[in-house]
Length: 480
Ligand SMILES: [Zn+2]
Image (cartoon, rainbow, N blue to C red; front, side):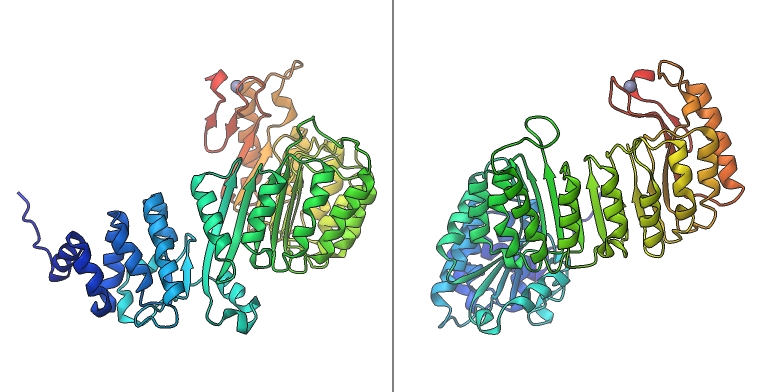
């Protein structure tokens, strides 16, 4: 039989306050700071909306990190109570005795705030992220003074839902009194009008990460592109293009003008470090122009599920802004028809910096891999490679592994099953697959101890899974 620990005085006081809203609200003016975080947490999770509203208005710390609380227990009524509390603060800002709130943070950060005795250190908001500090730095001083800041990471999907519409509507009405900053924004398949509406509320200049998935045509992309020019602090841009009418460029009147307008905006992204383009098929001249418009040295260059011409690889190898890459991803770009020397030059250029290389599903052949091997063996900083779904024979795959002798930082390696595993009809022989993988592992272990390594067959045409050999064999569901 367990003995129940008696509640502390603080817990008893909290319970009394939560049971009597009027008493709680009137007690806030004199409530010790150290009691605020725990009382707020319970009022928030218990949906005591009146107490929540009053506590936001009387919050004695500069920052209220709400994101983690909302993640656990999101409720529209409590959310509205928080915003109502901000309204009280906006009205009372000049004469409030207690309220010190400057930043309401909806992001999933500040985890420590709620677990430490925040009251022991006045205004402890030390968990503030680098991102937020950067946002504060970019705001003019006089703009910061006197304005409450609301910081959020936002993820909009398909349609704006009720909560999102409420927040946007609320924020839009208070634009002149609040600073509304969104640091990370993810937008999936919204209409251009909705995207523009979001960007008029959350000013683009505070944005650091934008992930945009669209099914627009070039005309709509061109109309969106001026929004990019205002994102002067954007360091990560991920554009995913889902093609409604199949893969490739659909010709519409004015196409060239639209593409050029879109590409021209890249010259305004003065903080860009990570660029992801998925499903974008640029003609050679357009890619050349895009690369020429890059104003910063990139850490990440990811051009996936696209089509390259020979000249694309040439432009990559010549582009100075790609010479310090840490991450290169060209997955899903068929390359079997390409001469690989320019890619080898690119790998030589980045051999001192490259940490991850993804060439999954590129249909690279033996003779092409042979061209790349001397450059690959020089990339001494590599920690991760992925060569799944390429056409390598046993001999060339062994050679590839032998060329990794000096890549001592490697932590994750993914290689395709050798061609010899497949019969004439393309079916995999499991016995042969295991046998050859064991041989390849022996080859590698003779020169280096791998950490995580796997060999995988092509994706099964029935279940879309692979058979994978790592420490053991894992078959796709149809072969089990
Ligand atoms: Zn299968």
